Image (tube, rainbow, N blue to C red; front, side):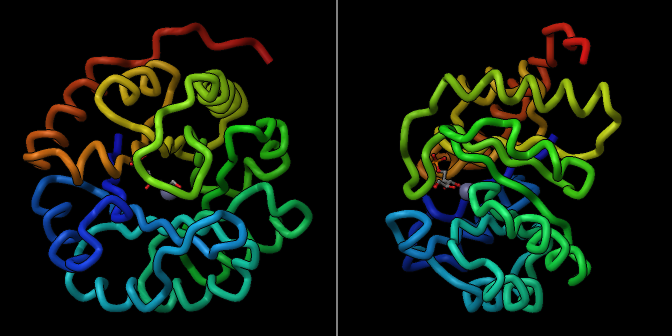
Length: 227
Ligand code: DX5
Ligand code: ZN
């Protein structure tokens, strides 16, 4: 199980200190949300931020590209220190090439699916990815409420993983706080992105510790569906 604080919720005038705080507090990955103002109605940061943070952090850099043309950014992020890059299945016919572009740079590849998108769209790629990111809010902004209707997708993704022998992680992202982390863990999620829930907690180390304890105490309970 991995907890990935999302830098989007950090103090943007002190990203370097905030990344160190996430590491000191016991986060394993640092989730970096890249928004292009086109795929989502917001802009965040680009490859230069990864370059400047890389020498200051040992955390695994989990880069989430919410971008219409990730093909022009992937190489820069990889060279600047991304450990994993996730692109969106909503990009359609270029998804396969994007996954292979990421893998060919020697880093891990993730595939994200937005709340309104049917999970069947990710099925053709399940044997090519290291991580399946199930969005639990519509991407673009931190601090939104968790969309409960996304929970069955986590269960389905875990069913596929167990019954077909895939090795991808199942990451959830958006509105993850103690209660929703537990709900996702019970469905089979193993990687938990949390921005507001951790960066805005008074004591981030205590919040991560508590989230981890609650998740460990909430193994998947539902039976696996026969395929
Ligand atoms: C949403 C981003 C998330 C965001 C989560 O567009 O992909 O990673 O940072 O933030 P919280 O945890 O505040 O919902
Ligand atoms: Zn994200």
